[in-house]
Image 1 (tube, rainbow, N blue to C red):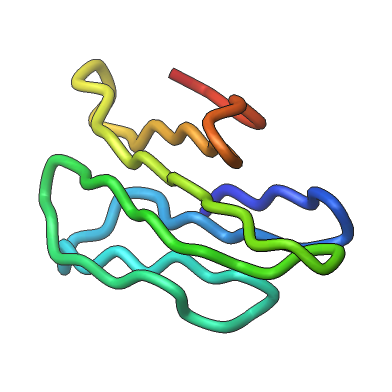
Image 2: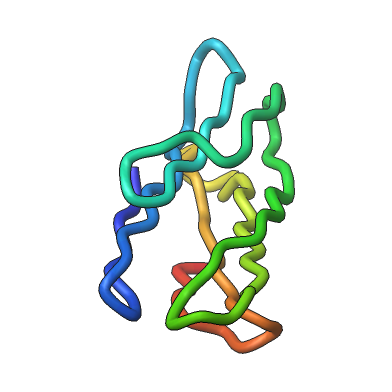
Length: 83
């Protein structure tokens, strides 16, 4: 699982899962849930500092070692990437 603290909020993005279920958490609450073996794109909106922001969490697969990759963006700006 990847965890990012940004703007005082916590985003938890899943790693690889044998079940294929990916759940993205925002401040501990589920905001996106998808089934995928190779990865999926999770989009959700949240209110921060009185305005609505849009997050995009991309989960992928790194074939060498079969591990998960993750990119997290807020309003199109890259916040985290381990790709």
